[in-house]
Length: 510
Image (tube, rainbow, N blue to C red; front, top):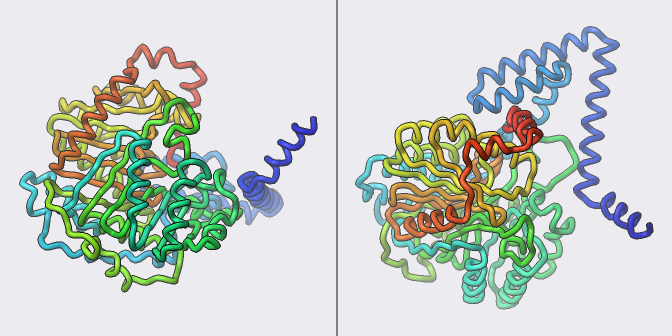
């Protein structure tokens, strides 16, 4: 009995639980206040209904995704008095202008000897590179070698070796940090490097790490000499700004070496701790000119969380300052997406790749909840005879998200898309590869959160040997999967299908 009460007390005092209760109280207070006023003051009720009507008209006429519009329209229809106020409080997809203004949105002015997009003979590949360069302001680069990791275990060993060799600075930006073998091994190196005089900086997402780190963990790191901030600190107030998280995974060493991919710095990613079976993830190590894009991306975020830096210091972190740039094949374009732009750049880049594929497009994603634009692109490609295959996990980390993923299977199967579920465990990798020509590896899931709400990063690769590595790993992983068929869909439990249909209506809001 004592153990039971002790467990209950631990739950009640957890930060996430306390925040959830405080936010729930605010929702109940707002709802009760509106109910009391609307019941007793007919004019207040009329004003609230008018606000909901005006908000609905705004939603219908803005340029948001149709699924997002439908979800909010239905929400307001279900609660016409409260719905409009709720949308005004938390419904905007983008950060407010004041917050966005703290992030430098001007070009990264990455110095390159030539316009690398001009080296691309295929018009559609050149257009993709041009979109990344002109819209996102991240210049495609040559002179960059890339190593592909088919598992986080492979990446971990190389990360440790490269960190040990650091001589000038180390930058890390991750969605999740968790004390354990993975993070503690890296932290030990960071502490030693700080004592050696290196500039070591860490950014972790406060929501991503809310269950894995103590509150004010950044203060602990600062005491060790590591410059650290929690991104967009989670506070118990109703605000859609809390929905905008950094989902990036970036490690930069001395400006000439960088890592990114799907994995966070927690033990399940290297299968030291088992969650949902075998954890399958992928990543990249870059060396050379294109590392600058990830360095500048980190510094942009650093400027957002701290006023201590400014753009003038960017020149001190160029990749060529400490190492000669390699001569390599192909073009590499690391890029970042943010919730402050008026469109989903993440979805646009994925759709460009799907629409322009001539032979095949192979996709790996843990969450298959595409927006309307991406869903239509997948269907068009398959109906046009393109070999479209998607790998998703058979084991879920979030029940509702898995039901949503499976709710999209039939529509895609009807168009000819082939879907496979990874049976050994949880598939967390995010990658695209098409026509043995282009590939993308990064942090961007096929869901609304990655496409509209989060800060994300990925690497577009053109005519590099790594493209074949991504394809080979896809096919090896597919061999460990079970193909989704109509018979598979019929065998799904009725409650799974019903929950999937229900959740699908509100998918853009989760």
